[in-house]
Amino acid sequence: MAASPKAPLARQARLLSQIVKAIRKERNMTGAQVAVGMGVSLRTYQDFEAGRRAFDFNKVRLFAKATRSDAVAILLAIYFNWPDLALLLIDNKMATAFFIVMRDLFTEVGPRLSRVPAGLLVTGFRFIRDEVLKLFARQDASAEDYIERAINETYEAPDDPGDDAPDDDDGKARGR
Image 1 (cartoon, rainbow, N blue to C red):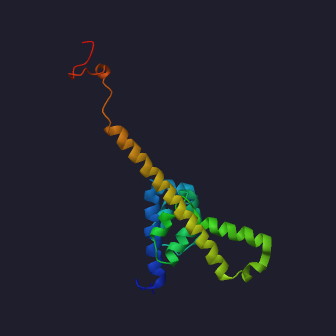
Image 2: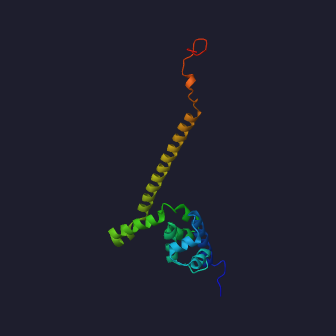
Image 3: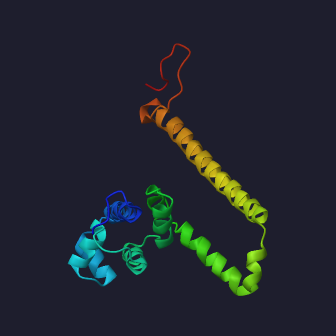
């Protein structure tokens, strides 16, 4: 018996399909290009993109590699029903970067990682948030400063070579 369209797996398949299509379009890739990048047939890719196959973590990983996107962000986008997350993190790979840092930390401290209090993580994430906000403030200030200077330069009177001579008392240029 086929699953009801309202079943969670059907909803997740539709969400994955939506995310995969959006990423492919963002990367300006054809289905054939993604299929080649994934090492699967075009038909297999088309079924994957349409959500007609069983959810396959390996295909998500292959898709992310083929499209230079973030597999962890794709999975989180499905889990939290936030499809835009996959596009937000497509280039900076923030979700995968977090996983890599946690994996490296585990390599250093082992199972003691489970004893890290959530409060310490929140403090660390707030620090990161504050640094991101400072980065954007610097970028915004830099852009605003650039625009202000550019506008001032644009609105200055153009240099006129015939206007170099100083004016007489009667307002006429000397030497004419």
